[in-house]
Image (cartoon, rainbow, N blue to C red; front, side):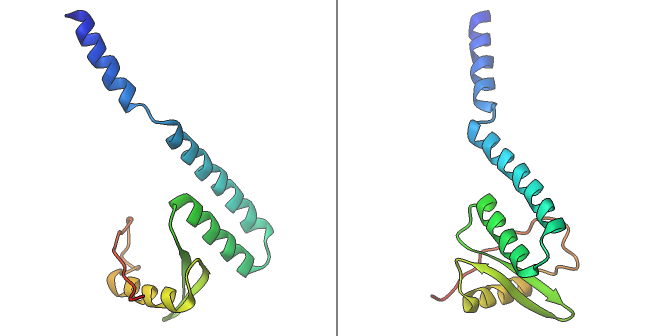
Length: 117
């Protein structure tokens, strides 16, 4: 009976251990954050910085497209679009802004966005 319980505990523990993929992803996140903080202090061109931020975000999130929503006063702009056209990013930005109140945002918000293309 003791061996059976040991086997069950061993089996359960084995499948709850993080995989190498999870470790690799965390290592990539830490490396990207270090790289990003270095860029902020060294890069003088805002557009280069915005492009790098979208590149890093796309790699870490494994998304198909990324862009930055930049708010300036009451206007919002789509910046540094990656793998998405300006028109599509602008449409999706409007959908996002209709659904999410960024002034009250305190946690991650997931939403399904659709384009007509």
